[in-house]
Structures are given as structure tokens and as C-alpha cells.
Image (cartoon, rainbow, N blue to C red; front, side, top):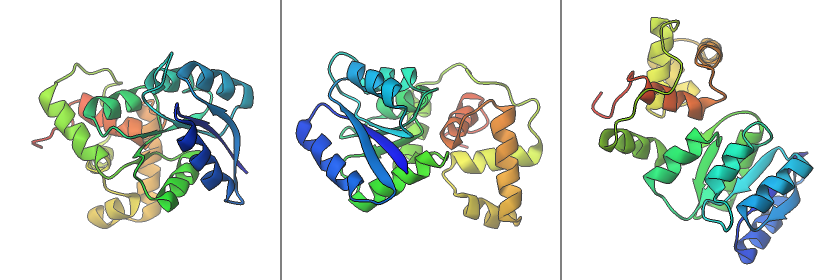
Length: 213
């Protein structure tokens, strides 16, 4: 059973999400929160697999709440605001996924399962917006260097940053899916990244990938 906490300052949305999540036999809502502070408190008490986290909430925003919970639960940010700073800040804070509130219900449920399984999930617009963010606002590298990363692993990392799935990477490089997964496992270890979202950030912050590249 995948245990979920819903954090949103709008009671109607929390209720809608609860009904949707509880309608699935493998999902269960174990808590709700209307503020960022309450989200952290409830998550620390319940230790859910996934926290559905809004960005704009009273007392503490969802980004800071996600940062405080990065070692407790996986956070799936769900927001109305498709803004670059939220995407970047949420991923830097340790969020494992980012979706908009107009995401179809079936896709939201699928996202919860993906994030709970240990994978990262980004809305279709997120990779493009990350590229735009790095184009406008260059940042100093804040990730572990790429010195120990092989040439083939760099190729895989670049393709991940471009938004390709494991299957697409395997097809592009003409290797097996198992080989791609092995490369990704090694990248996660070498770059000290928790998931795919962190690998995307590593690719950009290391300078391996740029919007023009």
C-alpha cells in the first residue's frame, strides 16, 4: 500500500485529491495539511511514501517544506503555477516530481506510483523550462564534478537532461535497456544524486548540457 499525505491550503482541492487517491486499491491517504508547517508535522508523524505538496501555502511554502522532508518522504509538487523558479527550486529542494493541477487524474495517480517506486517524474514542460532557466540565469556549479564519469555515462546523462526515457536512450545508443539502467545507477552513485530529477540538475549545473547544446 502506498501511503500519501496531501498538503494544500484549499480544502476543496484536498478533498478532491483524497477521493481520487482513496479510490485506488493500492493507494491510501494517511493525512492532510493546509500549511507548510502542518505538512512537515504530519509527514514526520505519518512517514508517508509520497507527499502531494502545493507550492503556495501559509506559514511555510511547499519548497521549504519539501526541503525539510527530503530525507523523510518523496515529494510530488502539484501546483497551479507553471513558473520556472518553482520548477528549479522544487527540484533543488529534493522534490521527486513536479506536476500541474490541470494534470489528468489518471496521470496524477500514475505519478504517485512512479515517485513512490523511487523514480523521478517531471511534467512535459519541465525539462524545457529548466533549459530556459539556465539560459537566463547562469549559476555556479553546486554539484559533484564529472571527473569520474565515463564518456558513455556522459552521453546517458545528456540524454536524460534532454528528457529521454530509458527506452528512448537505449534505442538512441543502440544498447539494451538493462545497460541503460546500469549506467543510470552508476551516475546516481557517482554524482551523489537521489533520482533522475537530480541528474537533470547535475547535467546543467556541471556545464555538460546547455540550452544551446
